Image 1 (cartoon, one colour):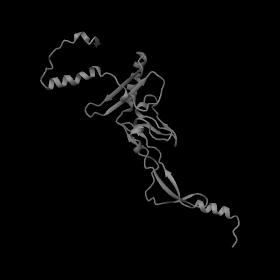
Image 2 (cartoon, one colour; image 1 turned 180 degrees about the horizontal axis):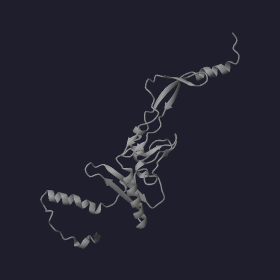
Image 3 (cartoon, one colour; image 1 turned 135 degrees about the vertical axis):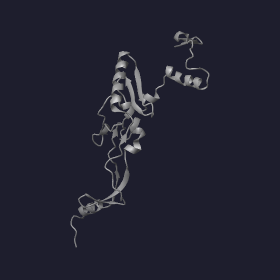
Image 4 (tube, one colour; image 1 turned 180 degrees about the vertical axis):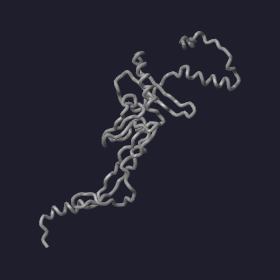
Length: 219
């Protein structure tokens, strides 16, 4: 038997050997507490945030590897990316995949979606008001958080900045430092009442709103 054009047949034979490929499902979607879509895939390379401005400090973004780099995208990376695995394919002479080797499980087309406690409507209203006040007062930035009292669930998690839009590796909502101010008064007041040091009806002289410590006024 004489084989003519053997090089061509050698190439076809090699293409039939098992080849290892990495199976990556499409990234899962992100929804608000009422099942309304917040983030989804446009294609294999792009993610879309329909609500746009005001969500990035919470949602975060992806790096060039399509992995979460900050925010929800980073924290829930393993859930959103789905079941990434290496699989072996056998192909026919035309390069078409005909069978998977050693993979009995059904490969999922999409990763796992997640639902946040945040309410899209409340988030939008808080952001709109906060952005308006930041611009009106010429403030550098502002933070707004809405929490459900009985459960502790976060309903809105907002950051507004007058500067140009930029990507934050760590959310400024939780990484910025500032004095707690009057919000801290609740803690010592509650402790004093619980320990019977003071009574709710007691009155105190508040130095007319200003107190000097080592020459520094505290207001």
